[in-house]
Length: 268
Image (tube, rainbow, N blue to C red; front, side, top):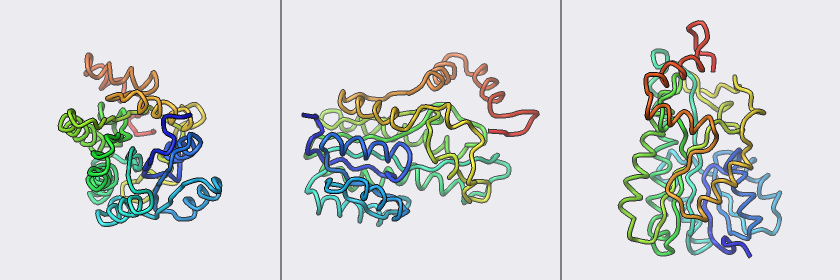
C-alpha cells in the first residue's frame, strides 16, 4: 500500500504540465486530491479521466487572495484536512526589462509568489495539525537570474527565500517544507509565458521534446516528499547552472548570456 493512501493532497495549477502529472500520480497511489486552475474545461477533462476517484476540482485564480481562501475552504469542507500542499501554479514571461510593462511583472509576482503565500496561509492550520508537507515548485531561475525572465526570476528568488524562512519557523513542528527547482521541463509554461505587454505569447522558442517530461519530474517530486527532503534541483543542466553561479558567477553570466542571446538579440 502506498504511503500516500487516503492522504489529502492539494495541488495548485493541476490542469497542465507538472501539476497534471502530479494529480494523475497521487490518484494512482490512493490519495484524495484537490486541484485548481483558471480553466474549468481543462479541470473537467482531468476529472472525467478519473471517474470514481476522490478528485475535487475548483476554478481559481490564485493571484486573488479571496479565491485562494475559497479553494482551501472548499477542500477542508470536502475532505476535512490537508496533508500535503503543492504550490505548483505558475506563469513565466519572455521580454527584456527595458521593453516590459510593469503590469506584466506584477502579474508574474502575483501568481508565482503571492499565490503560493495565500494558499499556504489558509492551509497552514490544517497542515500543522496533520504534521504534513508544504511544497513549492520553484525553478533554477530562483538561483540564477535569467535574461528576458527578470520578473520570473524575481518571483522565484522571492519564493525560495520565503520557503526557507517558513521551513526554519516550522522546524520543530513536524511539518516538512520543501522547494523543488526543475530545469527545463516539458510543459505549457513557455507557451503561456507573458510578452512585454502581459499577454500570453502562445508559442515556445525551445525544443520541448528534448526536455524532462512532466511525468518524470512529478516522480522526482513525489520521492522528495516521501523522503521529507529540504530542496532538490532537477536535471544536469539545472544543477550545473546553480553550481557555476555559486562558484564562478562571472563565467555563469557569460554562459547564460550566450545561451539566451544570438547576435545581441534575445532568442530564447
